[in-house]
Amino acid sequence: MFDHPSFDGHESVHMFEDKASGLKAIIAVHSTALGPAAGGCRMWNYATGEEALRDALRLSKGMSFKNAMAGLPLGGGKAVIWGNSKTDKSPELFEAFGRAIQSLNGTYYTAEDVGISTKDMEIVATQTKYVAGLDQGEAASGDPSPITALGVYRGIKASAKRAFGSDDLSGRRIAVQGVGHVGGYLCDHLAKEGAELIITDIDEALLKEVSARTGAKIVSTDEIYDQHVDIFSPNALGAVINPETLPRLKARVVAGGANNQLSIAEMDVALRDRGILYAPDYVINGGGIINVAAEISGAYSRNWVMGKLNVLIETLEEVLDEALKQNAPTNEVAEQIARTRIANAKPA
Image (tube, rainbow, N blue to C red; front, top):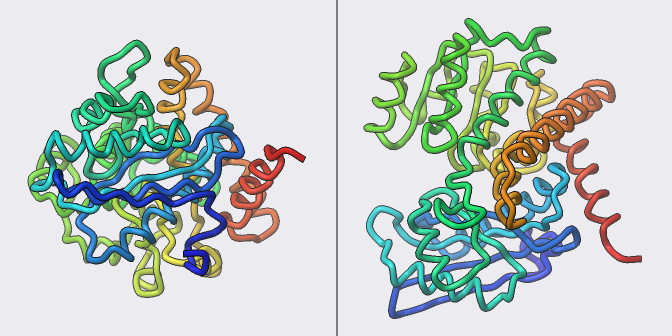
């Protein structure tokens, strides 16, 4: 574990199995320096346990950086459930997952992520209070995806201003990879401004639905990398910017809501060298965790959420401007800021 390339000094990593319900889950806590670890739960049918562990570790570290960049009193953590989200769900499985979270005594707060719904979180909440993203309750705010999508949309505009000299997206060709919760809402924002959309997803029914309301062109999951567009927006799973896909990109901006978009850190340098401006994922997609943080506080305030989102976009703009000024990779600039904030939070 300590030699794992994605370990990066995690405070703790917990593995849970409940044979009765079929639960196999990993909860990774990267840092609690700024506060209790917070990050969503992902349910995915991983090929191997090693793949699940790698995802949990990478996502957990990303949440530490995301919460730090959003200025939240939260550390970074993430949970993954190994299973098929379409066939393996049951009340018993999520009850077991809730008990697993409760056993950590508030070290980690969960919420929904890929493959998980608010209804699933309601079942989790019957076993633990350390859960957010609920539709019911005193401070409930529901699915945080719309806030995430709004932040990504505003981040795309900020990136476009620096790449093209204007944040006007009317007529801009934008490839959107993944049109689920965040990607779907994002397409609505982009279409409303007049952007020309090219979309893909593994869910064909969802693709047709988004295309019908936005006029987007549908392409296959592999063809999305070859489109002649201004902006490439990843909003599905991670590691989509890699040595195989990067040479195929025709865009001048990469900005989207997916976590861990870069397969390896060196991809940030490679993007810069190809003249592609990259909006660090853990900065641009921080709207959802801001919404969750408001819920965790026990007194949800929409005004507080929108104020924090404004500050987050300002932070993204500072990262982009500093990177362009230094001719440095944007991810390097953002990570330095995040690590400094985390380090300064630790007691002397």
